[in-house]
Length: 274
Image (cartoon, rainbow, N blue to C red; front, top):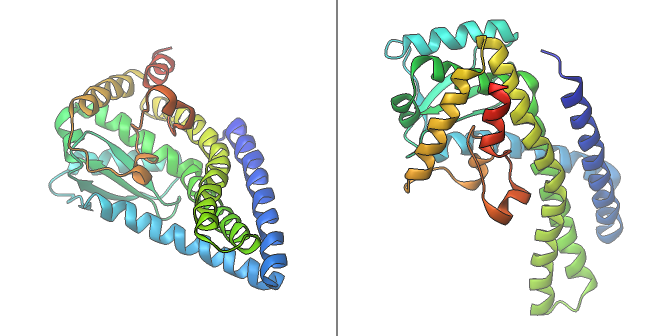
């Protein structure tokens, strides 16, 4: 699957993120007299470790376990067929009790993992489950999950450098400490705004790819309706904020929509049926 628009957006956002990173690297070199090679190596290691830990933490946070093929043969068959059609290796399939019907994907083409909740399997019909699986596989195929993780890593690096810059240029009193925290949060949020813009668009692309893979957008549209209702009724979700950004459902309301990682559910459903 080729998506020039998504690729272009990811390239633009990647360039902006690199600019943020370059500024942070210059500040770090000036403030701490750190050599360039150490800044580069340290940043690569930081993002790499964060990527590995982030993937592990997302799976662990919901208590996911491997999905037995003998117990769920139809799901394994669907994923195998969809993976072949999308040109990716069959990902590791896992299942978890999340408290709500939901699903998410982590990893890349050759080492992906798809996690679905038991509540989702109990809520959706077989063709609707297939639509959700196709959506998650599309994220892996489009490499946008990796882009999300890298963006979060760069945002963290820039925020840490901003905090230390405030501390080193201040009087080292308690006021500077709290100011550094505030500045770090603001800078991180500013960087993440660009990542979130990609996040919302990638959901539309994954929906479109899923509809193409299964031959219709209707099953996924029905699945999203049921998932939305299930999440509105539930009050015991086990999904934290970091994992929520990766899930198929992560709608925010009111002012929070400005920083939402997902587009409005009604718009996604409208596009699928259009």
